[in-house]
Amino acid sequence: MDENNIERKTTPDPTSCEVLLQHYGEADPGKIGNKLTFYGIDGKDIYNITPPFLNDGVLVIAARVEAREDQAHSEVCFFKSLNDSTDFVWTKIDINPLNLQDPFVTFIDGQIIVGGVEVSPPPFGSEDNSLTYRTVFYKGKSLSTLEKSATGPEKMKDIRIIRLPNGHIGVFTRPQGHTNGGGKIGYIELDSLEDLNDSANFLKAKIIEGQFALGEWGGANQLHLLPGGKIGVIGHIACFDEEENKHYYGMSFVFDPESDIASPLKIIATREDFPSGPSKKPDLGDVIFVGGIYEKDGQWYLYAGLGDVESGVIPIEYPFGS
Image (cartoon, rainbow, N blue to C red; front, side, top):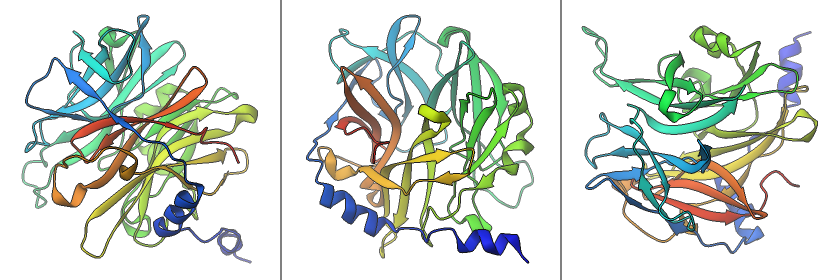
């Protein structure tokens, strides 16, 4: 008997973006987001931000910074609240930028780990002239001591890591192509941070089935350790419309690493939840790329990039409840 077929039969059919949006609209969260303002950098777009995190006792965020027409020369810069009393106005701090896109931050074993997407020209002599990319990790005791520590496989974005109660490192991946289409989410546990140095380990991750409908895709953006060892995942789900416009939505689910079972996806924010504004290209007008969530005074906030141009924050309900 084919055990793989048995497993597929018990996997629920994926729910489409259209249906998830209907469920989100029916819930009617009624929350309105705000855009963020940045000082210290002129003439460039600042977007795809992380939630706030502490660095040497100062609350900061990381953000992707680039000229509107140049995605090949992006930087990740760091910002602090302008006067430590507002969540909407941030100013650049004197920390060397990283040559990355789409930053993420986590803390493991007393170290800060900053990652992002490193973009490079195609190899010399390659028939494919498109840029290549991969996820890169830096770690250190603080932002001022970061050093490159690990690199993922080529053409894989949205790798995220978390320390588990069993001492292992939980790793979420996003392979693309073939049966994975535009991108599915995989999961693997590694013994230690050192195992991240072997990029082949990322390719061994097992796909979490039943998450994305045909032609749709998504990825993990931020991980939270929940009671009982489960993992709360903040991510994105995306699709094309008939005019080939992209639609990206913030989503969440809970993953049980013991059973390899994930809860159903649910949308937690859309571009329409924020004030209107420009987009880098006409087909990116309905794009929200979430960095993650942050709790302050009992309220949860979601931080996100808007239209590949701007950044925003919005209060949301706790995303890992029923």
